[in-house]
Length: 177
Image (cartoon, rainbow, N blue to C red; front, side, top):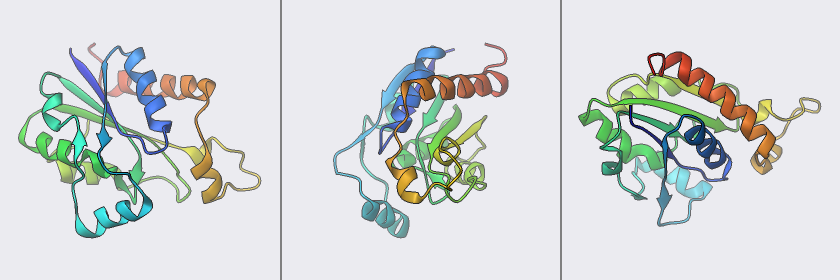
């Protein structure tokens, strides 16, 4: 089975996780980039206006793969907007996919993530692994939004998270592999 790990990361945390997952499976890692600088204002604008950011490479890059594993943040309960063009393409193609996220988690679990992915792609993901930075930080005192935003994944934490993600993928998606 030919597998692609397609990642987008604003802070670098999901990029570190994506590289680890791609190396452990093994899979090809494809990193999405945007021409314009991403800010909180552009995130909000994409929500309000329903914009689809232009990314490189384009969604045609996932054509040769049997399984696509997206790795990226969750913004306001939905997958990062740079994946939108890819999700529209998935709506037209019968391709297996999963979504992995390392996001802030200050508001708790992203309970609507699976439903939002299904709405965007036309079918449910084979797996969703929703990890939270808030769970990686000391709980006393409770981490602030600033603490969570400043956090960067260490090599040791990246190895641990990669093991967790790969274990869940093998259990839910790669049973026969």
